[in-house]
Image (tube, rainbow, N blue to C red; front, side):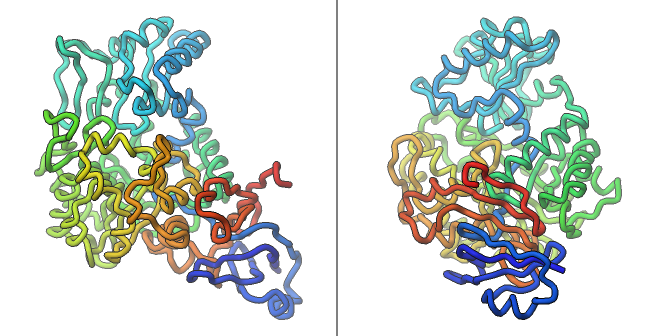
Length: 531
């Protein structure tokens, strides 16, 4: 027995402008699509419920790169992502510090000094003045930098004598004194001493995150969390005890290189597909981020010629990590933002290609030279792009890397023209998790700061942008036969929108709202404001 869904406009994403009138589903899968009268006749003895839908229906959105637990933490902790000035940050810390229990750490998430009139990092002494004696750590939006106050540094054993670590930077002022800022691997000096969350906290973070993702029409996500919360087992247990049991969300977990041995030691098999919870590629980092000038460039930063970024690993160590993945018969998923970082990993992929039938993933791929795009053509490689980075990085990124490099950067349309498979993600909690905002950014490339359009020749069509969040992420993980489209044999996972993105002005895409989210044939989210 099954259900017949109809009403509204149903876009199948099997091709441009492909629509159907109705969908018949059984046991969480699509059995058939087509004209309403024909499906009613064909399944007359099997339909136990018919449901008339209102709105525009698409396959459920898939986020190809996010951090599910990190997004949950952002919702549970002090959220600084919308703060517009350093004074507002200080005020929020002062308020929060007044209610924190003795001995607890105060942790703030997602500040971005580039949003401020005075785009300079918070100093530890500013935090000291309002922290009420508590250790305070503020994580930058990119999560490649944090600021710790003096108490947090004291508890972590960090002092003026502490030396820089490989792949990281401890920030110091003109006189050599610590500012409290720690970049990339240097963050571990502080993080190692921060309280380790327990299983109940992680489960709460996973549940909180998933409920928010469902409200945005996201039914599935490719997440990287397994190395940050007390080790592989506890973190995986949190996912395992929430996702398969609730059966409301489909998670594909990347495996950080620091816990890939744990994965295999416990007998798990990466690349083995599962309807709800599965493992994917081995994750590794080549460089940092543009915001803190730690993305690795082939030429120095335009606004600071003293640096060309940070290599997280030596060339030898990076090669060893790629070989390790190959020995485990795994593809790699590589964080690479700067062009030199991308060049390094492209060299290694050419030398050590992924196992037959698998694809490596380049995550971000922002500062990409044209010669590198040509080298990637016809390679077993996909690119996880984050369209919202265009909205949030321009125009300040022009100062960082210079006009020439900026004009060649975030080249989403160029990737598609060269036949490169791209999937769309948010990198939440780094950016907003809402796919409709990312679709808008991919189509319009409009800065959130000045409203200007940057590199308009790289704008995607609306159909291409929606493919980034439906069809393409399924292809990335070899699930194009069962996920990302509305067709026979596919998951009955849908998002229902209040407007048709193909029928409105493209400048209005960000105003579209999610009415309902359906997973496995069940409504898991309803927008009460539109009931």
